[in-house]
Length: 427
Image (tube, rainbow, N blue to C red; front, top):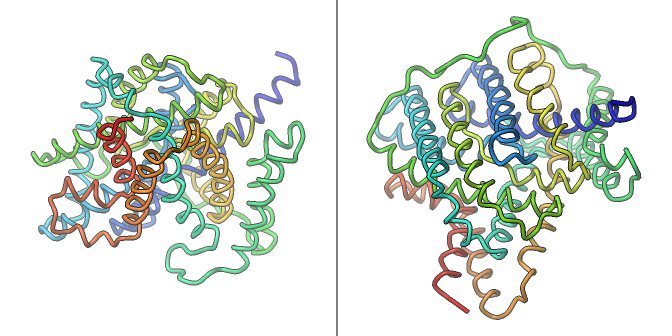
């Protein structure tokens, strides 16, 4: 391999690594807040998250769907974690006991997914995911997560309830830098726009705040802990939740595979093999998340936005980056240093990648003419799906847990409405 190719592969690997990292940092902190975890517990959760994200992405890329799609902490699981925490407390279950039950739920979901993949059940779901459905999924996903990213850019995290002006200005500048380089940059500057933007933003933060990242006094090497929340506990109620979640998650896998296939220029390609293999490994990854007391992962559709933004279509740098993130999970000092990336900068870079995802959503929705039927279906799905996102979770507290997990998630509600209406209202 010549020097130029080595440098190119190294830079693309680093940029994928930054993307994997930036997409993995925030949600462990959210879970830690929900379950009143100490700093040490959150740090341990983050270490295990890095390890599981890296391993899950690596396995999918070599024996699963074999595409450069990041497996990242899932928004749907954040909803399940928070709902089960609230309902558990209402029923007299401690937060620790709920975490142990969640480990069982993730493992059971993994078993269902593995069965769906091995017996090729998942491929029969593929035909219902028309361009109208996938376009709606992408659009509602950007709506649901854009608020989170924008809050992060404005410094509205933790105990902060007011906009942090310095952080917001720096993050906004980095957002424009990443977008500007991705659209107007040439050569390597366009390919590494996200990496360059994060480096510039981190440097500006250090200069403005006058503080460099500080690595805590931790062990140099430590294995990710197995069943860190305690041994899994079983309750028959987790079975229907796990089954329903598995079915819903297959739609996420299909949408991500379709999105990345389109960005890679493989439109119209037969995808049954990728879906079946991907679902089987998806199940294995959920089992790993349960065993290592992490947050279950899903194939992130934002990978399509990242590929479109950077133009990186080769799979090998993605595999190297996944393996690198997995290895980093063994070294707590590195985890501490990496975690020092300012949240506003990471959120700004991710927000920039979502611009491409919005375009992909519009492209899917408009592949076919928007006649009165399709316009009506979209209108109903968008109004109810986005409206659900603004409802407080408490309004569903009187409903059964299974229904709570669905109705509190506007993304699932909107996507389900499009699927149902398209199947019932035929052309």
